[in-house]
Length: 445
Image (cartoon, rainbow, N blue to C red):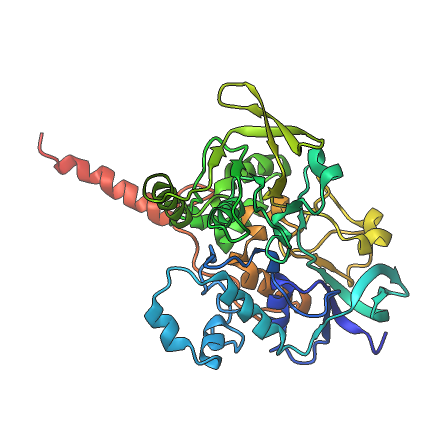
């Protein structure tokens, strides 16, 4: 094991990219990250024109814990010669295509990344982890970090029909998906559903005969990104959430759905204005129907097309629509990567198949304490709704680095939230209350 790695990373998405960028400043630590794809490419299927990030560009790969790091978004702007133009353009949010280019820019500079190297199997042998797969053979490592991302969610009712005329939003942009003269259904009421609806209405895939947007949600619900809601995306909240009993966590996560899974208010305004223009100011319009509160439970197909059978949650009626094309904006689901199959029985997983991560993102397992398995984007049940978002990517990577090196390489203890999530009043608060109570004796009357 003398020539082995200190850390092997499986998957190169934004989360392991953040870890690699922050590790680049740590000397004498041998880390290498492996990715099956030939190069870095972040959500290419959803790079629709004009779409924006829902996260501040300051919450990039490194800035929250290391603002002087050369792999920050601001460093990217300076390197590209765009800084002043970017500031003067005064974007409320960064365009998604530009943030994707920033991530690619970072990936192209990090020597610890190895593409075209898919990990097919991880085993624990001879006192260390052994990785084998496409482009790599018998790679040895002391520790692992797994960040393979979510998988597109294909509902059970559509699985047998999934194909050329029924695709997931994940592959929308890169597909040859023409809707000219066709009836089209979009299933899913989040941000992706809204963006695809606008794209199809604009005729970017041809002029459809009709566009129907179906959602289980009671309405086109807005993403809640107000100040105190954003406290859920802070280290202070995540630490308090992690300390909760396991049975308390699922209902809390469910109640936070619209903190990261709604339509941005800016998109809703664009949509409302677009439909006003369509209905009253334009003559050559594409017929459309927006159908919230519909839960699709069955799908059929014949010579006429696809038939979606739904239950209307508003009036409890059964409804059916017939279409020729379907786009699933049904989101993503977590799934343990297949390469961990030799270790699966040794990992501590909850009833949903999520690892019971420790506070520093380790997966408890029955192996030696000196060999750790870390997981990123696998902690929704353990760390809360922020886990899958970019907001805490840099902070989480810093927590993992401190754990790996067993020292405080990065400061991961920012000033706490103004909200007290658990515990009683502080001594300062108690003094303030006593002072107010004492002041009552001076009140007139």
